Image (tube, rainbow, N blue to C red; front, side, top):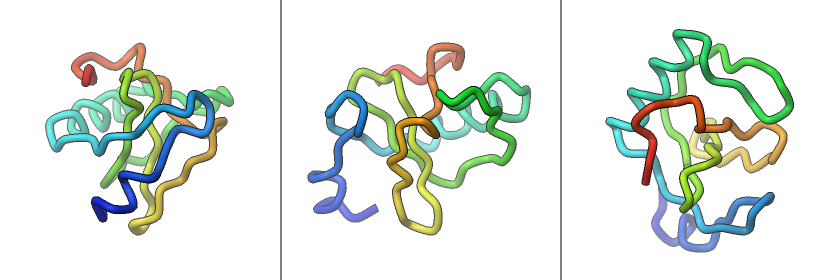
Amino acid sequence: MDKKLLDILCCPASKQSLLQLSSDQLDRLNAAIAAGKAGQLDGQSVNKPLKEALITRDGKLIYRIDDGIPVLLAEEAVASASIDGLSV
């Protein structure tokens, strides 16, 4: 993701800055998705692994990136509380 774009993006819910998930964090997130342990704030399960994602500075919310475009919809954010190893 472009560094300039990342510098101006923020979480729509908390207004915190966002960081790109590292490959290790993304692997842990995708393992949680495969195990059925990742859910969106709107209660829906996340069913497809992610290629890229952003996480809030406090590490509580994760936003997917689809085809290079961040999907910053608060209801579609993934709560990271139940996913081990996603601390920032």
